[in-house]
Image (cartoon, rainbow, N blue to C red; front, side):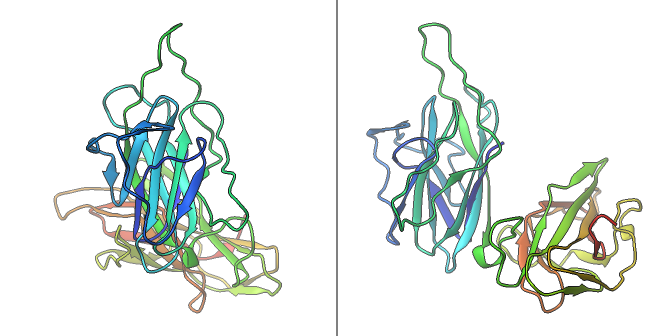
Length: 319
């Protein structure tokens, strides 16, 4: 799988750029509309095929080698956006999904780029001082798929599968520069079995001062529009949902020294009955302690009709 990251209130559309995996940045007025003339990834169609436009994301053109897109942040704050592209369900199949990430897209800014459908990713070669560009996620690329000898390869059927965004100021960080708070908070990919879901929350003290923890992370469940989901009941302890998840222990006071780590977990069940409508909420805003800065993670909560989310107490990582 390959990924795209974009900001809150984003629009994505593919445009002509230099080299698969490369991108350019336009001003706040946005990028010019795609024309029908042929670009590096083929000619843009007169009307967007089904699935090419979703949640502000628009594919501009696709050929057997690459996919072109553009992202515009129409929100009021800088945002990190993730976009997932996949097979449309008709035509030639993609060997795998594609994803891309755009960090720190400024309000009103536009980014154009493209993803390779064959071979190795080509990293963008931007001039000094250029704004951040879409970059290929390090999850691998699609294998080469040459057609029969002397024949052209089929153009795959593609669509936008999913768009997710978080404010850049609340973006999780598993590495790189230490945040101003001195603490990194992020979620892992989680585990799912028989309708039970467990997603780990991780805290790393990358600062110079001790961090004291004693209790549970404060969490707020958010829907696709980043609005709070009031119907979800947040419970202390994973045992409120299921035992044996590793999130059952009661809270205790401990110190995370510089370089140290701590862990918690989100636990829920995807169980459905006729009692209410299922709840799907992609985002959770997390505060490690009551006064800590918020971090928004994307665990993709599929709570079914249970309406309950268990939160484990912080514990030294590995305990």
